[in-house]
Length: 246
Image 1 (spheres, rainbow, N blue to C red):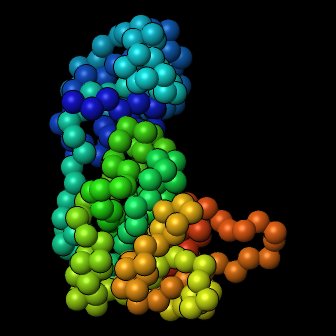
Image 2 (spheres, one colour):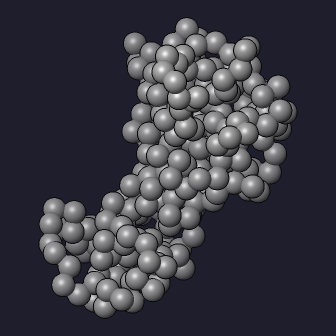
Protein backbone atom coordinates (compact mmCIF):
# COMPACT_ATOMS: atom_id res chain seq x y z
CA UNK A 1 0.00 0.00 0.00
CA UNK A 2 1.19 3.52 -0.81
CA UNK A 3 0.56 6.51 1.40
CA UNK A 4 -0.64 9.63 -0.40
CA UNK A 5 -0.46 12.88 1.53
CA UNK A 6 -1.67 16.45 1.19
CA UNK A 7 -5.26 17.59 0.91
CA UNK A 8 -5.39 18.05 -2.87
CA UNK A 9 -3.68 14.73 -3.58
CA UNK A 10 -5.97 12.84 -1.20
CA UNK A 11 -9.12 14.53 -2.47
CA UNK A 12 -8.36 13.83 -6.14
CA UNK A 13 -7.42 10.20 -5.43
CA UNK A 14 -10.79 9.76 -3.71
CA UNK A 15 -12.63 11.50 -6.55
CA UNK A 16 -10.87 9.55 -9.29
CA UNK A 17 -11.46 6.23 -7.50
CA UNK A 18 -9.01 4.43 -9.79
CA UNK A 19 -7.05 2.72 -7.03
CA UNK A 20 -7.85 0.29 -4.26
CA UNK A 21 -8.51 2.66 -1.36
CA UNK A 22 -7.59 1.92 2.24
CA UNK A 23 -7.85 4.03 5.37
CA UNK A 24 -8.05 7.80 5.51
CA UNK A 25 -5.65 9.03 8.23
CA UNK A 26 -6.45 12.39 9.83
CA UNK A 27 -4.24 14.04 12.42
CA UNK A 28 -5.76 14.99 15.76
CA UNK A 29 -6.67 18.67 16.03
CA UNK A 30 -6.75 19.31 12.27
CA UNK A 31 -8.75 22.40 11.33
CA UNK A 32 -11.87 21.91 9.25
CA UNK A 33 -12.10 23.86 6.02
CA UNK A 34 -13.60 23.57 2.56
CA UNK A 35 -11.01 21.03 1.43
CA UNK A 36 -11.48 18.85 4.51
CA UNK A 37 -15.24 19.03 4.16
CA UNK A 38 -14.95 17.91 0.53
CA UNK A 39 -12.64 15.04 1.53
CA UNK A 40 -15.06 13.88 4.24
CA UNK A 41 -18.00 13.95 1.82
CA UNK A 42 -16.23 11.84 -0.80
CA UNK A 43 -14.80 9.49 1.85
CA UNK A 44 -18.33 8.79 3.10
CA UNK A 45 -19.52 8.16 -0.46
CA UNK A 46 -16.66 5.70 -0.98
CA UNK A 47 -17.25 4.15 2.46
CA UNK A 48 -13.64 4.77 3.46
CA UNK A 49 -12.56 3.93 6.99
CA UNK A 50 -11.36 7.06 8.80
CA UNK A 51 -8.70 6.81 11.52
CA UNK A 52 -7.55 9.58 13.85
CA UNK A 53 -3.78 9.55 14.39
CA UNK A 54 -1.13 11.66 16.08
CA UNK A 55 0.51 14.23 13.81
CA UNK A 56 3.88 12.72 14.72
CA UNK A 57 2.82 9.42 13.19
CA UNK A 58 2.06 11.11 9.89
CA UNK A 59 5.37 12.99 10.09
CA UNK A 60 7.16 9.67 10.46
CA UNK A 61 5.24 7.80 7.76
CA UNK A 62 5.66 10.61 5.21
CA UNK A 63 9.33 11.21 6.09
CA UNK A 64 8.60 14.75 7.23
CA UNK A 65 6.75 15.84 4.09
CA UNK A 66 4.15 18.62 4.21
CA UNK A 67 1.18 16.27 4.65
CA UNK A 68 -1.21 18.98 5.92
CA UNK A 69 -2.49 16.60 8.58
CA UNK A 70 -4.01 14.05 6.20
CA UNK A 71 -2.97 10.92 4.32
CA UNK A 72 -4.62 8.09 2.41
CA UNK A 73 -3.59 4.46 2.23
CA UNK A 74 -4.11 3.12 -1.27
CA UNK A 75 -2.99 0.58 -3.83
CA UNK A 76 -0.34 1.20 -6.52
CA UNK A 77 -0.81 3.73 -9.30
CA UNK A 78 -2.82 2.26 -12.23
CA UNK A 79 -0.54 2.63 -15.24
CA UNK A 80 -1.98 2.08 -18.73
CA UNK A 81 -0.63 1.14 -22.17
CA UNK A 82 0.26 3.69 -24.84
CA UNK A 83 -2.60 2.43 -27.01
CA UNK A 84 -5.03 3.13 -24.16
CA UNK A 85 -4.04 6.81 -24.39
CA UNK A 86 -4.63 6.86 -28.14
CA UNK A 87 -7.97 5.10 -27.66
CA UNK A 88 -9.05 7.68 -25.07
CA UNK A 89 -8.57 10.44 -27.63
CA UNK A 90 -10.61 8.44 -30.16
CA UNK A 91 -13.42 7.94 -27.64
CA UNK A 92 -13.53 11.69 -27.02
CA UNK A 93 -13.56 12.39 -30.75
CA UNK A 94 -10.39 14.48 -30.41
CA UNK A 95 -6.95 14.62 -31.95
CA UNK A 96 -4.46 13.06 -29.50
CA UNK A 97 -2.54 15.43 -27.23
CA UNK A 98 0.20 13.52 -25.42
CA UNK A 99 3.11 14.52 -23.20
CA UNK A 100 6.36 12.51 -23.22
CA UNK A 101 9.07 12.86 -20.56
CA UNK A 102 12.56 12.08 -21.84
CA UNK A 103 14.20 10.99 -18.55
CA UNK A 104 12.82 13.94 -16.62
CA UNK A 105 13.57 13.27 -12.95
CA UNK A 106 12.60 16.24 -10.78
CA UNK A 107 9.29 15.46 -9.00
CA UNK A 108 8.29 19.12 -8.82
CA UNK A 109 8.74 19.65 -12.57
CA UNK A 110 6.93 16.41 -13.36
CA UNK A 111 4.08 17.32 -11.03
CA UNK A 112 3.74 20.80 -12.51
CA UNK A 113 3.66 19.46 -16.07
CA UNK A 114 1.10 16.81 -15.14
CA UNK A 115 -1.11 19.42 -13.53
CA UNK A 116 -0.96 21.54 -16.68
CA UNK A 117 -1.60 18.48 -18.87
CA UNK A 118 -4.73 17.59 -16.93
CA UNK A 119 -6.01 21.16 -17.01
CA UNK A 120 -5.70 21.44 -20.80
CA UNK A 121 -7.29 18.03 -21.38
CA UNK A 122 -4.23 16.08 -22.52
CA UNK A 123 -5.01 12.43 -23.15
CA UNK A 124 -2.00 10.98 -21.41
CA UNK A 125 1.60 11.00 -20.26
CA UNK A 126 4.40 8.67 -21.40
CA UNK A 127 7.77 8.19 -19.73
CA UNK A 128 10.48 5.50 -19.53
CA UNK A 129 10.69 3.06 -16.64
CA UNK A 130 14.41 3.74 -16.14
CA UNK A 131 16.31 6.95 -15.31
CA UNK A 132 13.04 8.78 -14.76
CA UNK A 133 10.85 9.59 -11.78
CA UNK A 134 7.86 7.30 -11.35
CA UNK A 135 4.43 8.28 -10.00
CA UNK A 136 5.41 8.64 -6.35
CA UNK A 137 3.43 10.34 -3.56
CA UNK A 138 5.80 13.33 -3.98
CA UNK A 139 4.90 13.63 -7.68
CA UNK A 140 1.19 13.26 -6.91
CA UNK A 141 1.41 15.97 -4.26
CA UNK A 142 3.33 18.26 -6.64
CA UNK A 143 0.61 17.78 -9.26
CA UNK A 144 -2.08 18.73 -6.70
CA UNK A 145 -3.60 15.31 -7.35
CA UNK A 146 -4.06 15.92 -11.10
CA UNK A 147 -2.16 12.74 -12.01
CA UNK A 148 -4.93 10.67 -10.42
CA UNK A 149 -7.16 11.68 -13.36
CA UNK A 150 -4.55 11.13 -16.09
CA UNK A 151 -3.64 8.12 -18.20
CA UNK A 152 0.07 7.43 -17.64
CA UNK A 153 2.10 4.82 -19.53
CA UNK A 154 5.56 3.56 -18.58
CA UNK A 155 7.59 2.32 -21.51
CA UNK A 156 11.02 0.73 -22.00
CA UNK A 157 12.21 2.58 -25.11
CA UNK A 158 11.33 6.18 -25.99
CA UNK A 159 12.61 5.93 -29.57
CA UNK A 160 10.44 2.91 -30.34
CA UNK A 161 7.44 4.54 -28.69
CA UNK A 162 7.87 7.68 -30.79
CA UNK A 163 7.92 5.48 -33.92
CA UNK A 164 4.74 3.77 -32.68
CA UNK A 165 3.00 7.13 -32.26
CA UNK A 166 4.15 8.26 -35.69
CA UNK A 167 2.61 5.11 -37.18
CA UNK A 168 -0.70 6.52 -35.87
CA UNK A 169 0.02 9.80 -37.73
CA UNK A 170 0.79 11.60 -34.47
CA UNK A 171 3.35 14.35 -34.93
CA UNK A 172 6.10 14.30 -32.32
CA UNK A 173 7.58 17.66 -31.32
CA UNK A 174 10.58 17.99 -29.05
CA UNK A 175 11.09 21.07 -26.89
CA UNK A 176 14.72 22.07 -27.41
CA UNK A 177 16.70 25.29 -27.80
CA UNK A 178 18.35 24.13 -31.00
CA UNK A 179 19.33 25.93 -34.19
CA UNK A 180 16.93 23.68 -36.12
CA UNK A 181 14.00 24.47 -33.83
CA UNK A 182 11.15 26.78 -34.79
CA UNK A 183 9.40 29.23 -32.50
CA UNK A 184 6.53 27.36 -30.85
CA UNK A 185 3.89 29.89 -31.94
CA UNK A 186 4.90 29.56 -35.61
CA UNK A 187 4.43 25.78 -35.74
CA UNK A 188 1.16 24.08 -36.68
CA UNK A 189 0.10 22.29 -33.47
CA UNK A 190 -3.56 21.77 -34.39
CA UNK A 191 -3.35 18.09 -35.31
CA UNK A 192 -2.46 14.92 -33.41
CA UNK A 193 0.52 15.90 -31.27
CA UNK A 194 2.97 14.38 -28.81
CA UNK A 195 5.16 16.90 -27.01
CA UNK A 196 8.54 15.68 -25.71
CA UNK A 197 10.15 17.37 -22.69
CA UNK A 198 13.80 16.60 -21.93
CA UNK A 199 15.64 16.38 -18.63
CA UNK A 200 16.89 19.50 -16.86
CA UNK A 201 20.35 20.36 -18.16
CA UNK A 202 20.96 17.67 -20.81
CA UNK A 203 17.68 18.27 -22.61
CA UNK A 204 16.55 15.70 -25.14
CA UNK A 205 18.66 12.61 -25.71
CA UNK A 206 20.31 12.52 -29.15
CA UNK A 207 18.24 9.62 -30.48
CA UNK A 208 15.03 11.19 -29.16
CA UNK A 209 15.89 14.48 -30.85
CA UNK A 210 16.56 12.71 -34.17
CA UNK A 211 13.26 10.81 -33.97
CA UNK A 212 11.16 13.94 -33.50
CA UNK A 213 9.29 15.32 -36.51
CA UNK A 214 10.11 18.87 -35.45
CA UNK A 215 11.75 20.81 -32.63
CA UNK A 216 10.14 23.73 -30.83
CA UNK A 217 11.76 26.54 -28.89
CA UNK A 218 10.56 29.51 -26.88
CA UNK A 219 11.98 32.86 -28.03
CA UNK A 220 13.67 34.68 -25.17
CA UNK A 221 14.62 38.28 -24.65
CA UNK A 222 16.08 38.43 -21.14
CA UNK A 223 19.47 37.52 -19.77
CA UNK A 224 18.53 34.18 -18.18
CA UNK A 225 19.80 31.27 -20.29
CA UNK A 226 16.54 29.32 -20.54
CA UNK A 227 13.26 28.40 -18.91
CA UNK A 228 13.03 25.24 -16.85
CA UNK A 229 11.32 22.15 -18.23
CA UNK A 230 8.05 22.66 -16.37
CA UNK A 231 7.65 26.28 -17.44
CA UNK A 232 8.57 25.70 -21.08
CA UNK A 233 6.37 22.62 -21.38
CA UNK A 234 3.41 24.32 -19.71
CA UNK A 235 3.59 27.33 -22.03
CA UNK A 236 3.58 25.15 -25.15
CA UNK A 237 0.83 22.88 -23.79
CA UNK A 238 -1.40 25.90 -23.19
CA UNK A 239 -0.62 27.26 -26.64
CA UNK A 240 -1.42 23.92 -28.28
CA UNK A 241 -4.69 23.73 -26.37
CA UNK A 242 -5.75 27.22 -27.47
CA UNK A 243 -4.94 26.82 -31.16
CA UNK A 244 -6.56 23.36 -31.28
CA UNK A 245 -9.76 24.81 -29.82
CA UNK A 246 -10.07 27.43 -32.57
